[in-house]
Length: 386
Image (cartoon, rainbow, N blue to C red):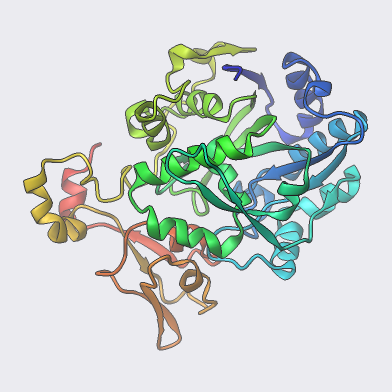
């Protein structure tokens, strides 16, 4: 697969259509990715119902611009995604997300079909190195090709969410929780994502980094203007470059380290040709990371005898999700999304059982009221890296 990553400057969303067209021209033209009569799924990041200015979802202007480019080639564009793991994959949930994120209006203006089919299909993937079975939403299975429209964001569990992680959205809503339950080790989870990306094999990936998200992403971080659009054929290559722009060290990125462990390339910036901009010129200084370190517990690489202190370490050396009761509306999203059933309702408010929590942070990621805070012990604050 082509290991080139393309970058264009795009200071605001008003200029997305022109800048995206320039980016695609650099990549050989839209005719390389969509042909007359084909059905092309446009797969944005639609984590939950959030307004465009919150930078939770792919910006609707990016979707609209890509839809118009696909249509010009005589192909039929369809926007499709499933929400985060705490949300049921239903037409009602999709409608709320489409409307709140601005996707429905953008799709209508651009003449893009919006998917309402909430069925999925089991598939086998014999070439998967870790995962050989997936459940995939039907519109993706019925499409001739998929264009991955991801968002540059930090992530509490996988450090960053970009091109590879965005493809987790082809797995229907609540089924995602099963993957978190089985794969709460970040390296195994990352390996599953790499298998999924190989199965889906997007024809093209575009990253919306006009306004990214820093801090405690992917659902509750802070918008950060970056002013870039990135493109690549290989989602892994795009993530390597995005990590460099965000200032995330390679060894801290579980997706890149899992790729190296599997001998899957490219996992290093030295293996990639960056076209359209000098990487040094587009790196973002002081891009805020999440408060959580990669690996959640951080116990995967320490000597075996130190694992004896894991029960203590889980409380002392990790960031704990905790419900902010005056914000909680008892909607049940965190309960549905918890892969190990560690959350219940107590006095009409959500309550997280700390001993059962695996620190996947799905509850924090998905809460529509931002009612799940992240709290750390004094010892964690004392010892964490600056």
